[in-house]
Image (cartoon, rainbow, N blue to C red):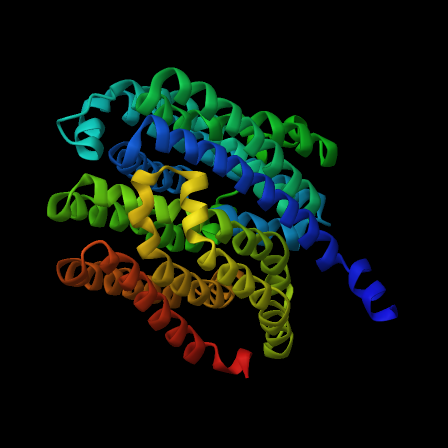
Length: 424
């Protein structure tokens, strides 16, 4: 009993429990939006949604300059120094707002170009890109504020912000999809994240007087220089990664059809739901610990804490998901999506390997290992792109999930060797 009490009183248990609640709420929201998409837009519409999601992901990473993990690191290290904290907050806020406004102009005035690149000539969704132009600055500021709150160590607030943001996203998605079908689904992707600003602004003002903290004379180029390595890392993973996914999806559409691309987007959506548990707990709890770890021994403790406490639960959950795959597809989607059940095995296997490698990959950000990260990420993306191109021709749509599993295995192997001193 004493052992159980000790566990339930630990910070990890409390944060994991709240995080689990957040993930369950997001999964519940995902069930509703997925069902709406399945009924109102079908597999072909799902493929278009996937294309826009990949584009939006790259755009969001460029607009935030990939600073998120860097902000968490420097806020965590300098939160006791009021002067340094003001420099970091002012410098990053001014920089990101300027970049967001420039990108918004590019989005708005070149909307026809983006429409053709993302949706080809058969679809006319110019307004989606113009709406994204207006929403982008609000989104960028919300991401910045969320990173500051995380860096201040307010883990519970970060999770509550995600919960409220997901609820807002659900409301917007339901209204848009019911009224405007595929167009509404696309529009909700670019509008919903921007609304998170109002939630993050409320929470940040509970910690610091944000508006009084932002002053032009606090702007310090040294802060930008310190964060620049994180930009390089983000440009590779968060920008190049979705672009590779976009290229693969376009290849799938060309080789085996838009409906098959929609099936891949469907299994990717399901994967996103359960991977949130791992990625959120890593970002909120384990990343700050890796940042503060002073030597290999402390890093080893963080790594194995994840492998002993989080990974086994994740594997059990995915095993249950595999046996419930037919039920899940019928519940979340429609019978038209039943071919997706053939993709579960390789997707789930690949995601277990991905979860195991994620904790190691976070060490790159924690210790600002820029060159090593870029090389490993470029290698991983190349493996995925070329193996998927080969396997699609041999195994059809199953070839993509097989390629993902293969890529994640190779990536885990490489990181395991690279961080062997911190692991063993």
